[in-house]
Image (cartoon, helix red, strand yellow):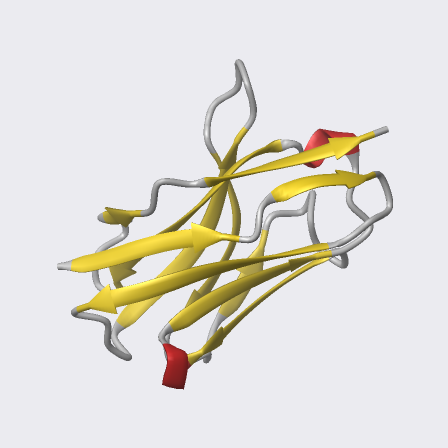
Length: 119
């Protein structure tokens, strides 16, 4: 079992920055992949970014490339999402998730943190 708790959301003006954190506890290991997803009101959940726990593989959604950076601190068991040049369309609830790398489905999810970008 893996427990995930997000923090760092809030209200920011367009062009601003926020850093989200996701504290992981339980059975985390180097064989897990971690990701960030978001869901805006009335829209389906969408992929934002992902990283393997070893850090060997990182990928981003096209909509956030060049603006968002995913990283992790293995010593703290914490995943981060640095979000720069925020746009109103980035407004959503952001969730972190984890999966064993052999499983294409994310099986552990946090509760989410709200990010609101004002124009």
